[in-house]
Image 1 (cartoon, rainbow, N blue to C red):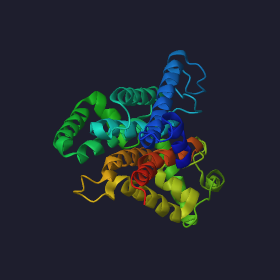
Image 2 (cartoon, rainbow, N blue to C red):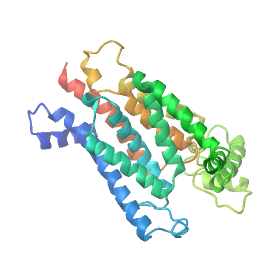
Image 3 (tube, one colour):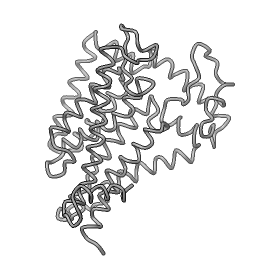
Image 4 (cartoon, rainbow, N blue to C red):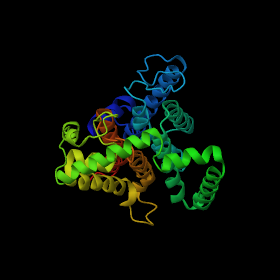
Amino acid sequence: GLDVLQDVGRRMQGKGSNKMVSNPIKQLASNFALITIVIAIWAAFQYVTGWNIPSPWDALETRRAVGPFPFPNAIALFVAPVVALLAADQLNGKEKRLLNPYLGWITTASGILAMILAKSDGGLLAVAAAVFVVLVMKRKTRIPTLIITATLAALIFAIPQTRTPAIQMITFSEWSGKVRLVMWGETTTMLRDHPIFGAGLGGYPATIEPYHEAEWMEIFQYPHNVFLNLWSEVGLLGIVIFGWILWKWIWDSGFRIRPGRKNDPKSQTLNPTLAIAIVTAILVHGLVDVPYFKNDLAIAFWLLILLTTQIPKRIEKQRNPA
């Protein structure tokens, strides 16, 4: 992947150009941005016209856009990590931004709009959590962020019109929450009998069937919780490995730079807040959905790691060859 992106940079900037090494980062980030904007436009057209929205999400009263995907939440699963990345990017200093402010903020707004039209509460909360973490990490915005967040939370629970939906969401007492509670309960029972290896890759629907007592709901492909998804698909060892990947991702995105080394050229290419924002969005959304086990999400996951860690390493190697 790195070689392909570097080759793109050579073709666009020309051999011998000093700007060539930075191009792959911005090109990959721009590609994510453009895809997000296209999805938002697609979702907006769908929501207005009802075109190509499968049942039961096509009803006018409860319409939810699906974009190019087969179900609404797929929009947020793809878009939320990208929006978290670009929102964090725009909150950084000018010298470290991947995209210019216009494209960055347009993409962020487009992604949020797409999630609103898909009515994905999980995706919106994931982005909000990512932005909150990024702002709290910065000394200048930490206190104002905590004060504003506490004020908003107090207002939400003080107003009846917002308090009831918030409580229902937190307690999983709305319809989608009830479905997930049942699904998680059945999955937990199944995993007691398959504690080490889980159900195996792709084996969840067949393995959960003897434990499925809620006949009023279908059997899903995954249990819609990142912890239970991993346990079911790749066992306990898979949970450990996935956790190590996330930790390594954040570490290699900038925390491996020793504090105080402001003149270190690596500090100009690595920024841990981007990876932290993405990981936060994935984990928060993963509490109620499936943020990895889907072809497009798996590819995007590794490309985002490439974007925030491996490409900066290659840039540093090119700037300072051994």
